[in-house]
Length: 151
Length: 151
Length: 151
Length: 151
Image (cartoon, rainbow over all chains, first blue to last red; front, top):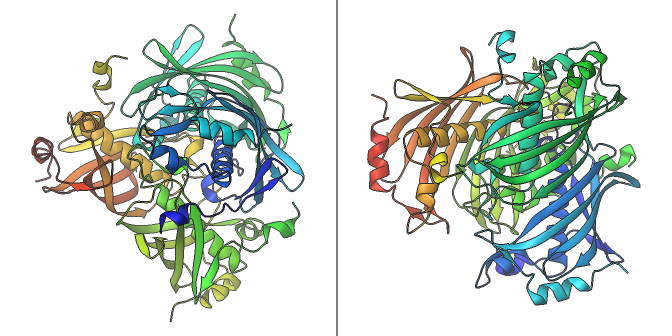
């Protein structure tokens, strides 16, 4: 793969300023209750955020290759489990930016099966070094994210 | 293993009415940021709840072997990530029961490295069938859980 | 989602009799070494098998909804890790059927980044009940799988 | 936690030169088939290796804090799934060193429920940098591991 491949367009799409990303449910996601394990939904939400960032031109590798390598970290998360997802199902993760400041981004994320909302989450993320030290969101990134803020 | 083995005492312990369970951090728990992946903490919290229930004599297998098999399901969860845990570290999950009603249990759970609180969560769980239908918490179980309610 | 949606075409494709399925690498897949955690590749292989089965019209839900619910189980697996995959990368899982008998299917699976083979696995799967009892591969399924056998 | 805590003794034990480590099965480990997800056994094996190394005084953090940070990586793995493990069960991982050379260690690992062997694996591990470059096993570590070689 060339570096260009990593920048290839996400398989998700924008609906207005919200980013929608399709996820398929596999065995790995389920537990003995027959539905998705509750922590699995956080992985889907994270994929939604990563794909939103990629679609916005803000790849993880870019931040990791900076002079001081940086990563996104979840700071706080609230999740509401309304209905379960099951193996084989095709669901979508919807990601909406609620707030971007110099030190954090707040998002609303939800998981949908067609028009059925299965889970909903509020997620606050920040930027840290690989040693875990907090950093400001790099200005070009914060500026780029402003464009996706809900009205 | 005989069935008795599954009922062997947990490796955790009670401190007053709170249940404390030790967890070791492995490669599997970390991500490229060098610390525990944010969804991994939910797995630790779930281990803490399972071990609390085992210590209280309320094993999952007991509910699964009932005439109508039942499982616990997380209904809502809020988690605050204050400090990260790293590979090799020995941490503890503290589980405290805040409320038990006929249909739900609310717990406060926290992850500690010595006297350092790393994450804190509020978790609401309920009981469902393997088809995902909500059920009341079986009365003997709800009654047994009352004994662990914080004052 | 209607039931029809679960039967929607896979995002993978056939190259001859081999099935190729794209996978994106996320934070959840990596560990502190900066690359994909070794057990994560097994999840990618399982996605490849599930998507191959879906593309062949043989969904998990179909087997689960049979009179005696059945699931696929891995019986034996050998995996060779040649080169690592990293976050953000777009890779593909290639799935080739080597043998189908009444009681097992043997596959060769490999993970590719462009023309670079990263890992290669031999996987033997069988069919079991939800109680873990071995069953023959249902005849219509075994027959359908024959069509994908390598020459 | 002080650094000393990370060096606290493992909860496992030696039986001759084999290292035995107890693992409890949780919801997180299972899938919809009701038993442990096949990739989950690799996580248990990795815990067994990590705890063996800790018991041998060879912690991951020690290698990570070296001038050139190093990590163990799995190079090749064969696993045989004979019987499944279920939620709540107490199982043990047995780790035996088969070969130690300058560039690799080969282990035999198995999962037991009492005297029932559930899975068995052959695992080959090597040492790499955080950039993925292969390195020799540091001499003091290779020397220490020799003591655990099967006769």
